Image (cartoon, rainbow, N blue to C red; front, side, top):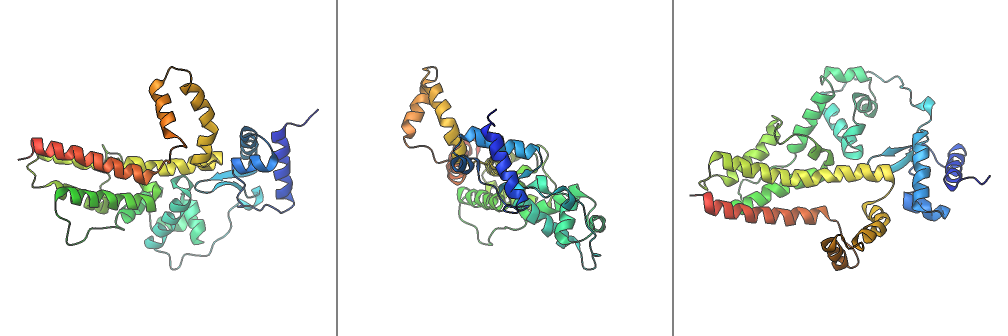
Length: 306
């Protein structure tokens, strides 16, 4: 009986791990690269990686991709030295480094303790738990950027400054955009500081207080909503082993088939107009959306302002 190609790939990767060619934490090739190396279809390569992941041989690491998992015996905890110099600042900074590198899903009291080289229980002398820690991380992240003493002239330029300041924070800490509901804002001093700045930029225009808050929420949600896709894309890339462009390459055939069916004429026309393809650029989308949003603000201010 002929062995399925995906099983052959699985056995080859297992052999390389056993021989020490691949060590725990080493990154595996992406689905596209693995398919090219093994001379198989991308679906076959993806099936092999999925089987290895389900068997615990490899694991998905956000922002990295598929990596060799540690052997079971190395997953057990080990004794750590006492935290003689540990303080809250150390704990929060270590947690932010983990979230920046691997996403919030990788964050736990245990992973923070392991990074600091201290017993997990020692962290509870400085934070009450993970929820408390995440709030401290969030407030610190928002506090990393402020506004100059001399502000640009005009409400539009000031709102652009505020929106871009927040956008840069989301790029630096992609997990940040995942936190906080628009309907349930977090009562954090540094987050309110950004909101206060945006509200200040809209003050003096003759708008009712409720309308000012509406516009501040809309501007805030524009950046937060787009930025949330950075973290989602990082997880998707880790799970599939495909970059956004590589994933698009696997879907274009089916997209073309749908376009050529005649049922979606506008979609087909758009695909034809794209020519060599579409460069999905979140930064460019953010700027385009910001200007469109502010154009709408201008019309509303002219109509409702005094």
